Image 1 (cartoon, helix red, strand yellow):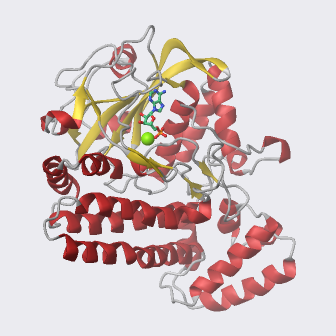
Image 2 (tube, rainbow, N blue to C red; image 1 turned 90 degrees about the horizontal axis):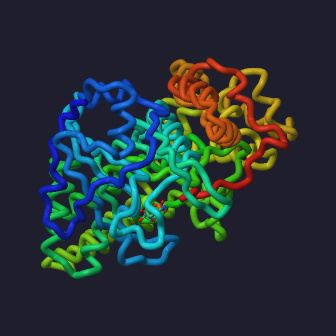
Image 3 (tube, rainbow, N blue to C red; image 1 turned 120 degrees about the horizontal axis):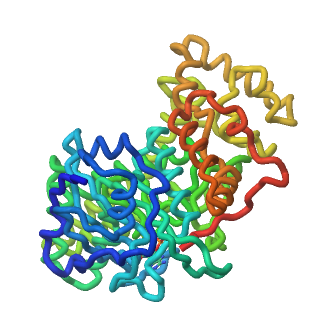
Length: 469
Ligand code: AMP
Ligand code: MG
């Protein structure tokens, strides 16, 4: 196999990471391979067996310079001064066909100095979950890490519920720099490292910006767009800790994330998010909070602190407005409006309130707007009809509202119950449900598989999701 590695992170100072190779596994078997992405990355040659050996961590490909990255992070609001890749190993980077530098990282590749009490492994469920959901997000047009390969390790790993089949997902990202990467050096008072990291992040992601505050502004803009996009799809990340908040503005770390079926602003899936800190409706506020942490970290390197603090504060304070603008643009498109007006916020929120009152299916309600089926999602028909009348008045004269809606309201999303059913089958060795989901989710705006559009029946509802670490 030829992977055209061109590594830059490995050239950063020693304190940024620990060099180490993946821990070999017993019997690697290739479960999924993303041929399009491999092609995009310029990866050539190799059959399934060799791919399994490489992306199972048994063979180190030429040019790889494997390492585990150091970072810190606020987890559920509490600062943890040292986290780091506890089970992920960066093989290296390649420049893709568009010229963008991409990390190739194995997740579940064995223990590292940052594993704390963990075993460095992942089990099949979360690996296939991440594979499917990240690829679905990509097809939905959301900035995200992607999945190149899933490999079963042939080893059992121990979790609370007993032994489970081990697996490794190969994740591809614009980079794995996180808010927490800045926090670790800021917290330690390692100003030189912080400066080096800032320059590296600017050169890699935002080459046109100037200095730490320029970087802050760029990341705020990217994260504002990202969270608005999550909101517009009913996506709940579930663990928006600062170590899971990427500098590139990609969705990263698919743990207990989920797409909502029945709409509710307070929806939480993650079993560990007991306070609902990362509930659907809280996500915009949390992103701002995370950016405030990034600002605090970046400021540690500034000489003229007073002016810098004022400027950084202003950048973070401007963020809610950015998010609202992005939110309005995306939700307006969901109801067929191409050029939103400020008062459209009320029209959109009225619909969301009606949906919440009836527990209407988020995806299917939007997809059905303008058709007879829309009314089926509501019990308060009088209220819905009144809303629909206002809406029709509003979109009169809008250029092709139905085409606008169809381009942004997906037909197929990775529904939780389907993901769980897929995992159950995969554990039994049946990858057909995985393949079926993968195929439909590659074209989420097309009605290709009616059964996958169906919300869960009462007994199919998955009330909670697990980190599955
Ligand atoms: P997460 O909540 O998945 O973003 O993980 C938080 C931290 O825990 C990161 O530093 C991970 O590398 C680490 N971690 C998660 N699962 C494991 C595991 N099975 N073994 C070692 N470290 C882990
Ligand atoms: Mg993480």
